[in-house]
Amino acid sequence: MNPRVIAGERPLLAFISSVMRPEIQWARDAAVEALTKNPTLIAWAFEYTPASSEAADTSYLSKVREADVVVWLVGAITTPPVRDEIAEALAANKRIWEVVP
Image 1: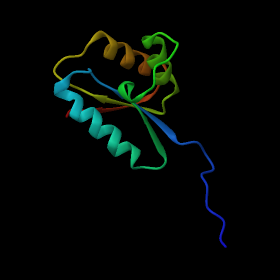
Image 2: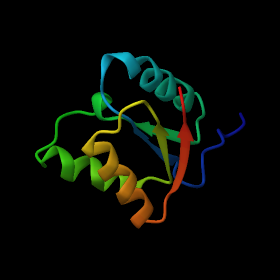
Image 3: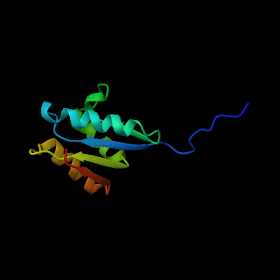
Image 4: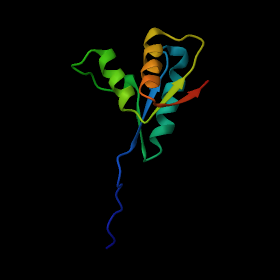
């Protein structure tokens, strides 16, 4: 019997940033689906995360700092939470993948 190969490093964390409105939800869902097909990535999107005892902004901004890459789904409107996420990513010197759906 051959032993199973296991990952030697932790998967990369991809934080999904965009407004949370019905008109762009399809893009958020598609990003999560596409990223989770890669076994070396973990997608983090607010709506797919269980509730936390931390305040929402504290929770998601900490995930921005932990992320290896931030996927910014750019829409016609940028809300203050999205501006905060991108500012946090820039301050933490994170890679940002800007996607216009």
